[in-house]
Length: 607
Ligand code: AMP
Image 1 (cartoon, helix red, strand yellow):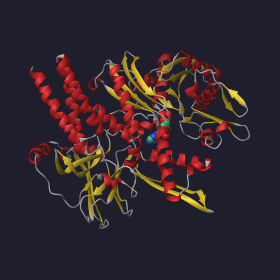
Image 2 (cartoon, protein in one colour):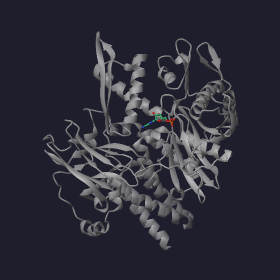
Image 3 (tube, protein in one colour):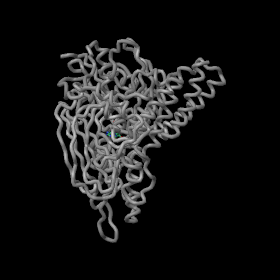
Image 4 (cartoon, helix red, strand yellow):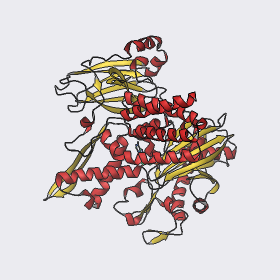
């Protein structure tokens, strides 16, 4: 028996978790239902019995007077919250959550636990930290250390870096957003800058989707679902589930039977929503997080190319658009190998292990070492090409991984679509490795723009299942590719290089069986839907322009310090324009801005 076990607790606004070090690795402990995530919600059932976690969360909308959530927002304040007839301090409510996690750890370890490391946001002041400590004590825990959440995330990713490292921690949870610049050296983490928004998170995405669904329902049936508490609760839950599915699926359907009544007749809710539509709803909020990112970087006096690693924390960072926007802005892949909602609890356990003198090794996770996607008709080197690579599962995604994207037929009455699956990082498929291909035949004879959903499922042993489904008819075909990853390692690259020269500058014929990314108007799922959806930012040609632009920004930043004040000011202004164009994903504006920046950089380099 090891009396020194120090558990690590992530006491979050929306969710909380507990982890311990076992066999040298952090492990997040599941509750009785097998789920490691405990909603940070406390309530009383109608009989007055205490509810903690999911049961409490599920009654929130229907019985808010008997339910307390987001208590973390009140930590350190001299207030009380009502729960039934009683009033409780924020510490007491938090203690109920902590005690549940303590018991969970005791059940898993089979012995009592006394000590804990608890995480708090980097911006928590002394009072808030003290309140957290008191909550731990009320729960019967000795709080051996309070650490910052980004510190915990850094420890999870890099418990023992060999050299000094700078990390950017992007944390988007249910109710809050935090961005931190951290430096780790000799096991000591220093937070150099931290920004955020305590009112921005995945719950806002649920709310946007919820309103979108309610508005559509109201338009169709002239009934406002928001008027009924029960309907509201169901739609809100369905919206969150749909949001999570859209992290994997390109299209999802929300279905709730008998959600309302009109003229004595029951009404059902059925709404299909695709990822493009959803992304347009949440894009403004994500762009806001990028402005905080810029502020944190500028506070830490750091350029994007000085960051060693970008790590994603918080459940809402599973949203694919978060990855895409960050990769665009920072010009590098992000790290999300470790379950983003468990990384902070794991880091707290790592800190506990380090304090207790336990050996903690790096966390091993299986990831896709390379991007998987399909060949499409798209812009490449400024021309239309049928060799454009469209990524579906990005590299560094933890396994098993599943993801679906929407494509469309390229020509009218296209009866077949050839699905060619490639692995690699180049926007030109001829530089990547073909891992498999098949033909879907018998497509509906309709004008071009017929939507085809392509789904990739990659399991732990590298077996890849590729499924193509015609959205309108459900016609589907799939193949299974063994050892998809092995094939890539063995690939011959040299002949691909030779082919590059030949195609530069050539405009390709449109072959009949290819697919392309949908044009904006094709992504609308209902006639007259609100905003037109812009083309996906992942179109390979756009991605390539953005990558070149980011390389140019990095180069310009290098020459900036040697420029005189006037030139430097001009270059800064041009760079701001270029960054804005990148942010807008406006290829023409990016190219125009790049030409200006290139000219000035050329002049400054020469000067
Ligand atoms: P956290 O506070 O880190 O537990 O994050 C909770 C938030 O992450 C909630 O808003 C969840 O709905 C959201 N979330 C969890 N899983 C996913 C997912 N697969 N895709 C998008 N959001 C998710």
